[in-house]
Image (cartoon, rainbow, N blue to C red; front, side, top):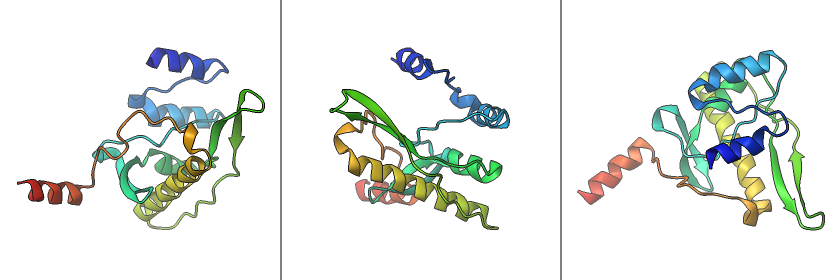
Length: 155
């Protein structure tokens, strides 16, 4: 399935970047004047995550996009596709770049940016709820303080 998805993603010249090389690969593409697409509505391992609300529940969300945006100053342009039944085709929509204010507090910026990214995704999903394909457990990884309270209640 992964090979099929990557083949379709590559039809217009996009090249998948291996997760293990994501930072280097993304920086290389940006330095060359390219565009990097990042899917961030995925559960993330705790060591790579920022726990920010997603539909009101803390979700382990990648900090990678926020770190990349803050480090490079590259604009973050939200984009999504949706099925347009009147055309019988998918439409691609890109929004204006997000205003991301940089402060002297890197961790606060990462948290604020990641929160904003999740809010943007929530807005897309609310607009087209029937078109969000979600085949994984978004809230699988729980914040450390929640996992402690869950263990305490069970045990």
